[in-house]
Length: 117
Image (cartoon, rainbow, N blue to C red):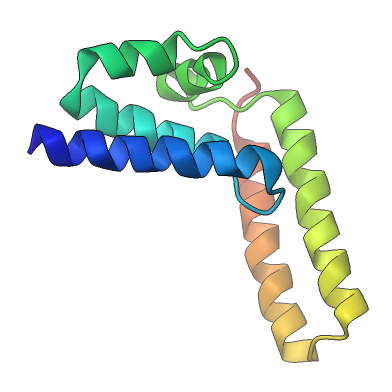
């Protein structure tokens, strides 16, 4: 089972790294998922991820306090606004826009109700 957890962790890291260059693919959630998988499979990989200078602080903040950085909140908000703006420009049907607005609004509410790191 540890091998499966490790493979899932590595896939999560790969998706997170792809998310660094693709703006619509979130990086931090995949790194959080990788930390979860590595905690169950490999102490070495888990320690590497937790101590990583770029990803480690966000993971530790989330694991200890459920916190998201102010910068992360602002970036997430800008991304969500950009996605909705693209949907408006594309002229999607009103029902799709309503569904998207409700979903994105719920995501923003969740993000902004988390403590700041």
